[in-house]
Image (cartoon, rainbow, N blue to C red; front, side):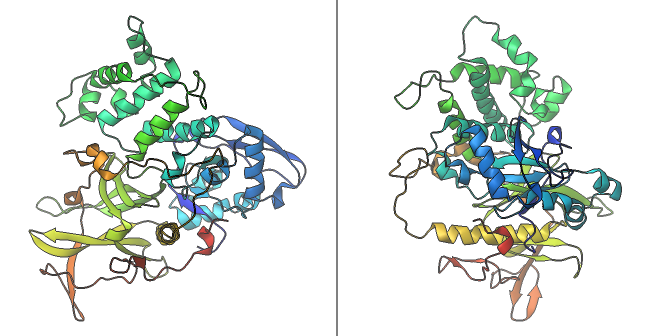
Length: 466
């Protein structure tokens, strides 16, 4: 990236589209609209907008919302439209980037010229991709927790975060508790749930009859299963005991419980990018074609998600992959992911080819996330949270407490058999297919397991925060 952009990704949910914030405002005093995760607007009266930085606007939003200082790290300003998302660096000037929006769309999307001409970004106050999940559990500011909860809820309901039915029901039950209050036996709760089902469950689980059967195929579900499962989960939500730091009416325990449940999803907090992969050859004529995917990148790794089926195709931690990208000047813009696998029992290297005009952005983000992880592993003295003193990190659940991620057929498990990959080993100067021993990698970009450090990381100015 050339220093004019932040992190670009896949479009936000459609109901947040075409909301102008900055692109038509001149140098005079003006109102700037910043959108929150719940679609509420924060109007800011500013002077000399063209020279105003994202950091200054970020500070203004925090002052209006009266957020604690932890919000400085937890949230970032984004420019987003149905075609592209960009997380801004503090030094970026949103007005100028808004004016450059058509150029960014032409560079990083395949949108038709007519769509590019009509598209206009909005300023959004959203979770910072580089904010570690462990720090979320230290937050005590209820409004900060609410904003994080609202954003996570929106991603679950839009199926941007694929979830198993059981997890959707558990998350939906917490939303019921927030919106409807404690479960009351004998009350017409089922009617209330039925009328607002799409407020609690993703749309593909709200369909009845054949639609629901299609959504839950392979699970032996009956019509109404999502609704009944949600009601059962709502009934089981335990009331949180009030304490000195949280009054009885506080919803913080339920926001925190929702976020903690989302932490079990390996792609929570990711930046999302759009791409396509080759379909495996099928049939007598070996017809394949391409399949649309979302590529989710976080501080923990990379996940490739089937955009239509709403399940993970491939999930890799940074220790498990090598990567590179080719630019449009060389050939079609592609992100390459390499990982260990087997072919009919033979250990091989597997290459996955992701076609995307955002390959350069994805490669830069992978590189920067690895750099941040290396810094985070260095010993550091305990710090105080912005919302109060904390002497130890929050209780991030270890993998042994995540059985749902290992369930047979879980949407978050890799489906490597659905991928069309190049299987190879390299012997000397020859690339050979399907040999029994992995010897080396196509790419120099990979995490060194023996030394615990990444060998070819170069800090990318366009992704640095601060």
